[in-house]
Length: 589
Image (cartoon, rainbow, N blue to C red; front, side):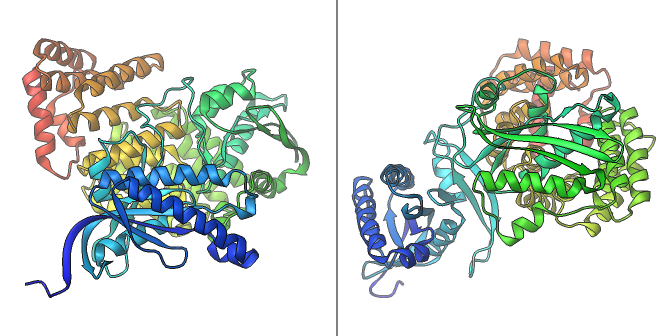
C-alpha cells in the first residue's frame, strides 16, 4: 500500500541545463542571468503549450513532466529551434545553448516534486546531448519513431549510476528521416563542421606512386574520422571524384558538406611535396592553403600538421583523450608504412588474388615493424573474407587466423577502431551477440565517422533482432558514405522485411540489383531476388515471388536454405525460420 503523500505514475520527463553555464557566469554574471530568465520564459510558454508542466528549476536546470511522450519531444524540438533563433544576434561567447534529455519512466510524486529512476535516467540522457541538442531513451524512441518525422541516431548503451541495466540512448536529428541517401541527390548539411577530403593528385610523374598519394588522403580521412565534433564523408564517396575536374560547390551539394580539402602529392626520392587547401563549398572561399616541402621521413608529422590545420580553421576543440586518439602514431617506420599502403591498395581490389597479395605485403610491413597494428588488422580482414566467401581450403582455419591477427592487433593498439569492429564481426559469427554489440559500440566510440563501422553495427543488430536500431545505424552509414556499397542496401532491406515495411524492402531490393549490376557484383545479385521473394510472399504476390525464387537459383545454383543457414546467425532461431518459410512458399528448398 503506497505511503500517505506519495503518488506513483508513469510520465515523460524532460530534463534541461545550460552548456558552459559556469563560464557564462564567470564572464558576465548579469548578462547571463538576463538571458537565462528570458530563455526560461521560452521553456515555460512552450511546455504549457504542449500540455506539460515545470516541476523544478534550480539554477540553470529545468525539469518538466508530460503525460504524452510525443508532446514532450515536440516541445523539446520547438524549444531548441526558438532558442537557436534568439541566439543568432548574440556574440559567439554570449550564446546560451541548452542540452535536453527525455525519458519515459516510473516516478514518485511528493508535494509537487518528482523522484525516482524515471527522473535520474532523464538527467543522465541529458548529459549525452550536444549543446542545442536533444537525446532520448529507448522507451521514448519506441513511442515516437513512427509518429514523428524526425531523424534518430543510436548512441549505444550507457551506464547510469544506481540503475542496474545500461540505458540505450538516441540523438534526435531534428530533421525528416533519411529514407535512403543517394549520391547526387543532395543532402542537408549537418550542424557540426562537415568535410569531404578529395583524393590528392599524384603529380610525381610515376603511376606507381598512386598508392602513396591515395594513402596520404586516406590517413587524413582516418584521423578526422576519429573526431566526434565533426562530420566526415567516407573514402569511397570522395574517391569517386578522383581524376575528374569538379567544382567544390558541386561536391558540397552532392555530399552535403560545408568544406572540401583538396591537394596534390609529389614524391621524388627521399623528398615529398604536398600542397593542401581548405575551401568553403558554398562561396568557394579558401580558408587556408599551404605548400609543404619535407623529407619523406617527416611524412607522419606532416599528416598530423595538416589535420591540425583543418581542426584549427574549423574551430574544432578536442579533449585530451580525443587529441591522443587523433594523433596516435601506429608506426614511425617509414618503410613499414609504405608497405602497408601498398597492401591496402591490393586489398581494395576485393578479390581472392588481391587478398593474397595484400597478406604478403602486410607481412613485409610486420617484418619491418612487428608492433605496427594496422597490417595485422588488414591480414585479419583478408582471412575473414576468405572464410566468408569460401576462398580458402579451410573456412575454420581462415577464421582462426583472422581471430589470432585481430587479437594481436588489439594487444598492440586498443585504440584502433578497426580492431574492435573486426572482433565484433568475429564474435557475431560465433553467435556471441552481446560481445559483438559491445565491441561494435567501442569501435563507434573510437571512430564515430566510419561508415563501414556503422553499417557493420547495423548488420550485428539485425542478427540480434534489434531491427529499428539497425535501421538507424545503416541510414547513418549511408549518410557518411553516399556512394555506399550495395550490401548496405541489402542490410536495410532485410531490416524492413522484419519490421513489416515490405514495399520499401522491395524498392531497396530493386536498387540493390541495379547498383550491384552497375558495379559488376554478380554474386550479390541473387540476394536481391531472395529479398523480393520473401517480401512478395508477405504481400500475397505469389506469382512474382516464384519468379524471383527461380532467379535466385539461376544466378546462384549452389544456393539452398541449408547454405543460407550456415551464414545466418540470428540470436532468435525463429527469425530465420520465418524467413525460410517465406522462401519455401516461393519455391526455394
